[in-house]
Image 1 (cartoon, rainbow, N blue to C red):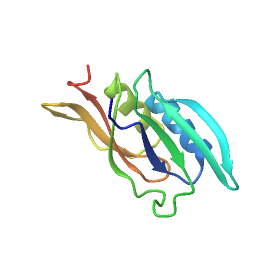
Image 2 (cartoon, one colour):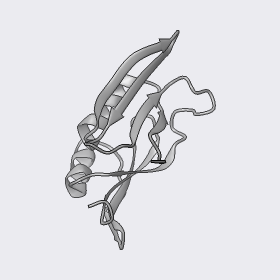
Image 3 (cartoon, rainbow, N blue to C red):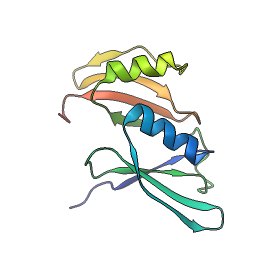
Length: 122
């Protein structure tokens, strides 16, 4: 079945980024291996969803902080928002749309994320 299997997220520190995505957004490492000199494949998944993310440092045309618009669906968007704000992350206010409740935040490298609880996914 066609679909999106992996989304690459450009970061400067793969371990720091993995900790952020795991702690706040519910991801877990599913693969972590060297690919070659200076290249590490660090792939994360969330639940049983087929789409995963990889935290990349080696794709020259993807500088850390340049990703924007990636929407990550979470179970408790209000709780995630509160935890990020309490830990010093600059989050937009929570907002409601017909498709769900969401806010925007930047990961530790400045990649702009939309964190949401969408109505279509549940």
